[in-house]
Image (cartoon, rainbow, N blue to C red; front, side, top):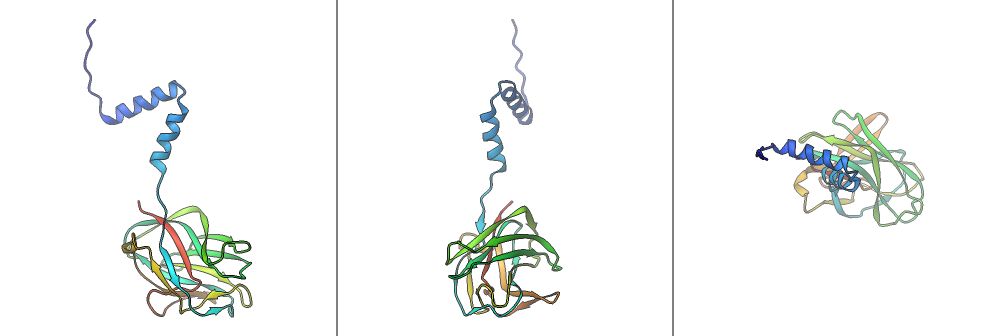
Length: 196
């Protein structure tokens, strides 16, 4: 019996292996393969902050604007929880033209104080390098306290080059305003991202 040596390309070999796994009913193999392809690590954009003055004297959306220096995909948004916070807040990711890209609600009631409370977006959002984006939290006059403009946030040291700039921003009366000192944020807000 003569055996012919046939060289397959890698895609063909991969297809044959998957086909054999399906035929053999090897679901664990397919599960592991799927996880290895789809898994990605989420990184917090900011890891610490220095608190400023507490406030709760306005009904508006406040947070920060930022500019990514590399392509990234935002998966979660966050608001810092202060002792006594107990309300729900809508976190919003805005695009360069102040168009709403995504929202998620977080409930501060019972949440760990002195930490960022994250909410996972229903669909992750891809951001373009060099564009301006905004993250805000809905706040209410007389409601939960948040840190005012004097709070300074520190970028993730490992991926600090992924965000090139960030400053104060707020949305009030249909207008997005930004400015103030570099490195600051109302709230403060935060987000997590993956790198493609």
